Image (cartoon, rainbow, N blue to C red; front, side, top):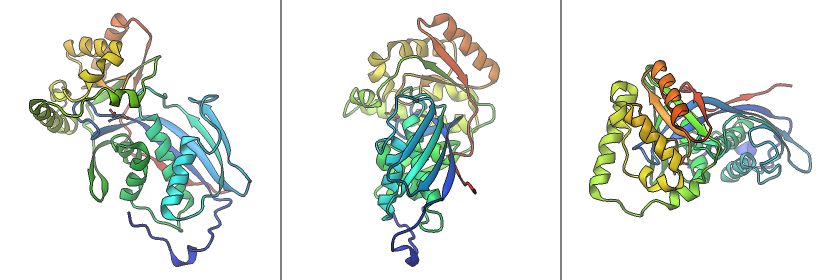
Length: 319
Ligand code: HSE
């Protein structure tokens, strides 16, 4: 990463009083065959206001999802991501006052940790405006260092459909605009799933024919999402991760089979346990909701969500 730190800022940088508003979308990663590569930004947001202060400690307030559950000190994920960003650019982090209004469900495969990391990285870059300039690649690199894989943080940062890949120089991304006929539906169960557990269920190597299977489907999926939604059912087939993880989320697995048998392009959202249906029109989305209501043994919340085309935004707030 190469960042621009102006000469005048090599001493202590006074950021006290700077305030930014940050909005970050939910994301669904993998999209079936695109394991650790493809991601989609969805119009459901965490919104935060962050101010640099001269207080002795951070002052953190969380409303909505995570209220009363997430830590309110320097171990809060947004604060950790800010601290990591400041440390990467070599500027001392000030104390902050942070107020978060969260709506992205936690532990459900909708990129809540990626959103928190992106919130911290873009908040830091917003507070550092004029002091340090971070490029899009820099933001992706810093966020990926914390998340471990780029497929949630890329769409959270840039919006739309993203292809993310890793190079020796760091992660890179390409943003694409999704066909207007694609109507995403997320079905969210009451229980959570740990991404670490899901990842531990995957084998170190896979049969060559399964790798070829996924290469063909993920290439097809790009065409289906940007141009030919009628191909989405075939394009969302996968042999790299979902079957290996099915034992840890049996109802997700069963409902996906029910939905797919009825022609709906349903996949595990991220590491699960939520289901993403890439419906090709709003009426198909309503049918998928009805089918899940009839077939599910537990409660599943349907979230019809538009694709977010903007990604994370950071706006300076004047007094
Ligand atoms: N690609 C990741 C996985 C997304 O499936 O493990 C979840 O963070």
